[in-house]
Image (cartoon, rainbow, N blue to C red; front, side):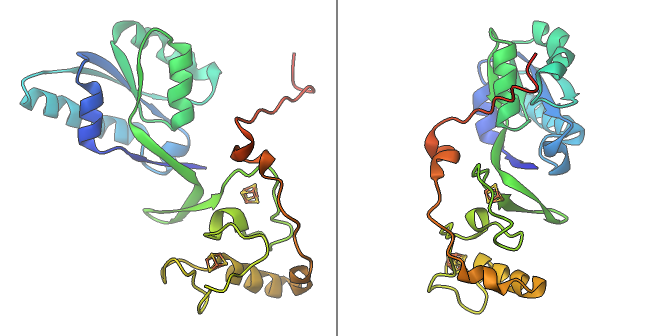
Length: 222
Ligand code: SF4
Ligand code: SF4
């Protein structure tokens, strides 16, 4: 899922400074799970904004809404009525949600309340870790189901590097070496011979380095 975290309050208030009435729009999908932009966060943030603006002598009206999924056009109609009433929308969905709001409600500013951070999952309560960099050409079948792109600090395809120490990455003793994890997992699977096969240089054109990506599924088009 997409992991995001709320922007600092000062930054949010600065973005909202020109507006008197806004829609605060959360999303019921990924950001609800990572507790950055779901119904609960909409309620808390709306109260914080109202209080801060009241204290500053510049009150603001905040409409609240948590959309089913802010990243899909079919759910945009949920915000149609509210968007007619407001000066701007503060979205606490991921960056995709903010951009879809901007595209759908073209005449109203869409402001990002979150910093969209990475693709990952909750490791434990309140701890989220990156697990995929959306490289566009998955190699997990070669690496024991552990991503060397997202989890190795150097995105090495044939690791480990010389900095791996006691199973930890050279960047920090708190960061596991991805290639140690890959070794351990391949060993457990009885597939250590995978390490003898050099993974060829990756064609990064399938990742973000090749420019904005697009998938066209002719079988789905109408
Ligand atoms: S290899 Fe690429 S697609 Fe597969 S998990 Fe890693 S970054 Fe994601
Ligand atoms: S120590 Fe391990 S995770 Fe860190 S950069 Fe080297 S191979 Fe990658």
